[in-house]
Amino acid sequence: MTGMTEVNADLVGRVFSGTPPYVVSAVKIAEFAEAVGARSPLHHDTAAARAAGHADVIAPVTFAVVIAQRAEAEYIDSPEAGIDFSRVVHANESFTAHRPIVAGDRLHTAVHVDSVTERAGIAMVGTRCEITDDGGATVVSVSSTLAVRGADA
Image (tube, rainbow, N blue to C red; front, side, top):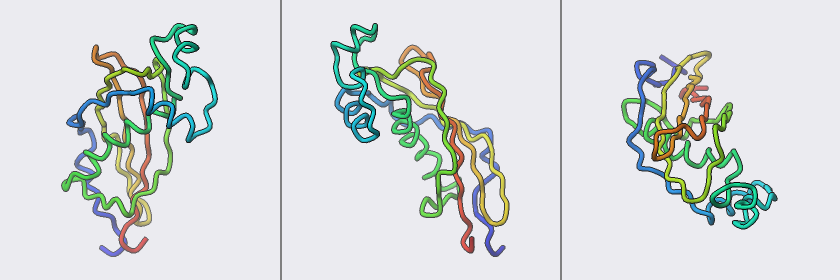
């Protein structure tokens, strides 16, 4: 069909969890904080973070996007997903933090394909990344909506 996307709606309900764990480093946190203009000493100064009760520096909440997008690639790059990444635009992203991401964390991500809705040649794909620590406790949830344009959209 002209203008239709090839996104496979049959994957709604599927969970992708094959991405290796992400090991959070103080350097990555500092680089991200600098890039987004997060100036709090909690992102840059171990002593300040420890004084505030953290084991090490903590990441800005939006740092979770680094981990989520890495894991979403397992779904997006899957041939059965039918997603041409060159036609993808992030339409929305939201974060629910359950605790701060701390340097030294080893985080695991399960990507849930929550919805695929097609309108006017654009597929709106809803994903949810549940990011957990080594103990299985949820650290942050990232919900994303991807707009996938069809060939003629």
